[in-house]
Each structure stands twice: as structure tokens, then as C-alpha cells.
Length: 377
Image (cartoon, rainbow, N blue to C red; front, top):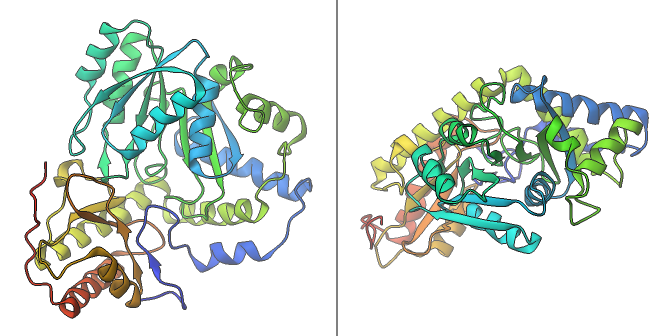
């Protein structure tokens, strides 16, 4: 069912938000007002609690998209003489490597097939081979494919070697367990428009307090200086520069709903039901997933495109959109795919409706051959 006149966003963010979250943006806020500053403070507190970090970590919010906060975390946590290892199995891992290049930070990659995840043994081997590495940067859920990378296993390898760990949890935070009290993590990065189900416009870095305290002077940029942002907030309770006030208010509403639902375990369970319902329904139509289910995160699913000559993504997209659902194009280069998100203010019944919309759209196009043109690599 379409919520009002808006199509359902089956994307990994922005995503479909609840009416209550939308309504929270109808009020204007003064950026220096005490009531607004109190909202920011409660958001930071609750975000740290999501990863069980109250004893060791602090939250630093930042204006902009999630990538802004990824860059800020890398620039602040990694000293200018540091070196970062990136287990690379997708587009967002590659983005981290690009950011490190812009920052002038030394880096190395472990190149892994997009349907495989890194292991602790791979990290062990790389760290033994290159003692200059100071940090590992891991994308927890690589939304280029939807693969879930094994954070606890990677964290344990980093701990064995005394290396810092930076986790891009953009598409996993709030849906998949992250417990910084059980394994050492220097920074966890996410954003408002993902699994907490807010709207885009604010990122945040949950950093170890002792790491953040030592990071002064690392940043290449005033706007992305997390140490400066954090210390200013500690002194004044205010953001340094104009915050996205409506986004922050909506995020508070979204966090309230997240907590009322039961927090990460409940949110993750709903998304898992969405994933399983979607995969089962699409399989009944003849679609194949790019990933085996054992490594498939409950965030976004990559499907092989049908090999039928009547199929093309753009008209398929438009026909599904006309039925109330917005899909996501594929991110792979070797095989033709498309992606369907299963996060946002939607449930398993909505995923059944998605499958029906896909079936009707394919019928309209005259697509009957579902076998992909090329098997998964």
C-alpha cells in the first residue's frame, strides 16, 4: 500500500518514514535555543546506548550525508602518519579508499570478491605482513550488494594486533547488533536516514572518548573537525555551525519510535522478516539473488536481472514505480542486477505487495525468461 500519495522507497536510504517522523519537521527551531540543544543531547545519549558504549564512547553529530561523517571519522581518528587497511568487497569500501587518497593517508586494501566477506585470518595475515598499518576500516554492511561483513571476527583480529578499528555502519546501525563493550572499536559511523528511519541530512560518529581526546590536529578541515565539534558541544551544548534543525527534530521522533518498537533486536527482526518474505516471493517468480542467504544482511537485496530480451531496467523501474514502489539500480559491473531495499517504515505485508507489483510489471513488459544472462561470478 502507498502511504498517502508517496511511493514506497525500496532503497537503503533515503527510505520511507512514518507519519510521526514527517510531522516532526513541521516546527521551526532556533539553532541556539535550549530546547533544541536538549534534543541534540538526548539523541547523542541514545545513539551511544544503541551500541552499548556509555562507559567508553561519545557521539559527535555532523551536518551532511553519511559520507561526510565517514570522511570526518577517517580524518580525525587516523593520525596523519597512520596507515589504514581496507578489506574491499564493494563500492562503499572503494569509497573509503578514495577518501583516504584525498586525505593523504597511507592505505592498503585486501581485494575480495563482491559475494565474499573478509575473515579474521585475512586481517591477521595482512597486519603481520605490514607492521606500518595502524587502523582497519570496515564497511559492516556493503550496500553495493547487501553483504554483511563479520564485525566481531574482524574486531577480534584488530585487538590481537593492537590496531584501531573504524566501522562504517551506515546501513547496519540500529538493525544489526554492534556491541562496543564486547570488542574494541575506535569509531562507529552512521547517519539519520538509514535504519533508525529518520530523514537524510545528519551523520554521526560514535568514537572512543580517549581516541577522540587525542585526535586534535588530525583533521584536514574545520567543518569536519570532530574534536572541535565535540569540545564545543561540551562547553556550550550547541553545534558549532548551523545544524539541520528539522532533520534533528525528525531524528528524535524516529529514535522514539525505534525505542518503542524494542530497539535494535526488534528493528532487526522486522527487517529480517522483510528480507525473507521478499526473497521467497521473488524466488517464486524465478529471480535469483546475487548473494547466498547466509551472508545476506536484512538491508538490501541484489537480484540478477532477467535475461529475457524484453527486459530493460528503466522501463521495469517505471512500471514498478507506477504501482507505488521505487527500486534501486544495480551497483555491479560484471553482471546486470537491480536492488530492492527492505528497510524503512514497512513490514512483510508490504514486501508481498512489492512482489505482486514486480510480477505485474514483468507481465506488462512481456518478460517470461527469468534466467540471468550471466551467472554470478
